[in-house]
Length: 380
Ligand code: GMT
Image (cartoon, rainbow, N blue to C red):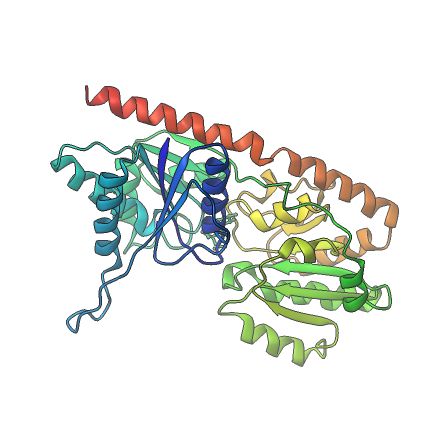
């Protein structure tokens, strides 16, 4: 198949999933065209079947905001037409599903049918998409997509509860590539970060409010009083400055390291003893899955789709959002008992295997075929 993928190219979960999906499809022999404003962060090496089309939003003195949507639609029309794409798969509804709708209409007027699939990732429904300024557009463009997928059962349900959706939503969970995410020996890293045998707690996110990074620090403040430990905070975003201030106020700067955005997160996960994800909302929790693939148990909130990934009492523990004491107590319980910690490590790995890319990719391929056939038969 010739597949067009539209996504955000930055360090967000949806862009990561879209890129890994595209690369996986290319490995299976499909031609994959990424169309976005910057080379996606995980699209690093040359691949014979992978193409990247950069969208440049046009500047003009009249425009206070460069109309990216118009430039993206123009580029999509061009790529679908000249590369003869079979399907367009857009990740994150805003604005991609609406742009895909416009693209479809333009191409239709030129006698070209392009099936469109929209994948919902989370905040495009929960936090941003349900804002009244976006909601009518999101609802309309989901209903106008030929196929719709959600990354968890919970996100599907929340979408149905929030909007009037006439389309069937197919759940295809996020996935993990074990050739990259697996536990490797990085003892030299461990020695550098925790020279006195301290336990290592890790949090990775985009440092937005929804991630509740202040809870990660609150949990660590309690844990570090009982257990010699270090906390690695990986990623960057609007909350980082406040989190640095909080560490200073709590006099925890020697124990907490801000590592910023990192490419090879699997090398840091290789030395982690616990992964902390206390999010206010999380449609899936890809970062937790990446940690589990590296045999790291999860201490998390029970928000959104997290319970579909982290199994309470098996692969880690879950508490209510904001229950810092509870999450700290569970962290201490695990970190104090190496036997139990090792059991949870193994369980985390076994659960992550359910989301192996080799299990999930064929679900997308089958869905592409189904939607291409459906659109084809509607137009015959
Ligand atoms: O807000 C973010 O964390 C980024 C966001 C995105 O769209 O890039 O992540 C969402 O999509 C990920 C991939 O499907 C999911 O694993 C995250 O749970 C989801 N984030 C939220 O729902 C907050």
